[in-house]
Length: 382
Ligand SMILES: [Fe+2]
Picture (cartoon, rainbow, N blue to C red):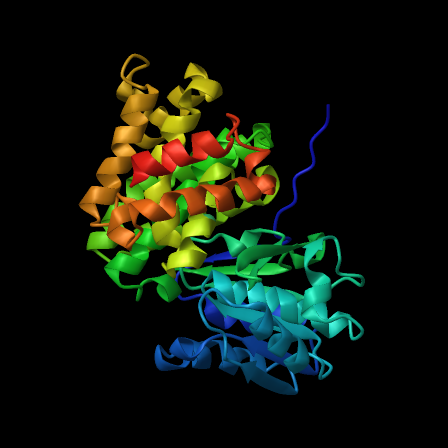
């Protein structure tokens, strides 16, 4: 038995530290052309200028691609590929998970002139190592900054470009970049991070190192998420959330997420709800479904991470952990039932059929899930 864990090569974190990006870019050998992959909101928030200025002091040209929509499709990825062919020696991604995923595509495309985005789809399909990339998350949720995955919607399904070349050379966690998130976005992106931590801990792909990352992410999220939901300008808590999302990203980037994400992706793409909302809604149900198979000890570890170590072994059981997660959803006014997302009872069979097609997620699930089990679970979620 042996394990291997991959993680970002360098992590720079703090508050108002983005001016250090020039030094980091130079450290990666960038001299000529940098492409910033982002979306239009970053211009409005003034984040773009804060990144552009220090970069323009160390390289000859800084260009921008800012046409990334949430939940990008393969067509968007192809546009990113086309825009990345102009001889860039560094790609900087700044935004939420969708933007960071597209920055990974850009870095791959810049080093692989003969491949288009559809040829990157799948595992280990990127031929040459990507050009250097710096990723700057502006939400504390997806963990994309720490994973080897880039997700795109192709044929109505979320598909992954999985490659070690997608791992970031430098991750910038600047708490001031996440402090402008409105409460609702803070809530569902933070709960997405919690779902990554819990699902990777319950994954059959978990190992002692991913467990450490996952449990620490759970502790930080239970301590800080509701604080940043109600006091968005608390930079110390924002930083803890940024670290938590990244730790959860390292955990699931190696251990994988499980059936919760099979359900979250199926619902998210079909009803066009933000990924974090569907992942958050699914979390307590998938914990409940897996509790028996995961065993008392694993569920107690989750309960202690969420409720605090001093909760006592007797009180730290699966039901307490699940109730705690449900309470978080309710306190932050996130949906707790599928019917709230516009799902009808007649839709459930079709959804269950699609969930069981997500074999990659299901094969790592602690407890087996066939069509009947998926349907029963979706009915309880409805
Ligand atoms: Fe997720």
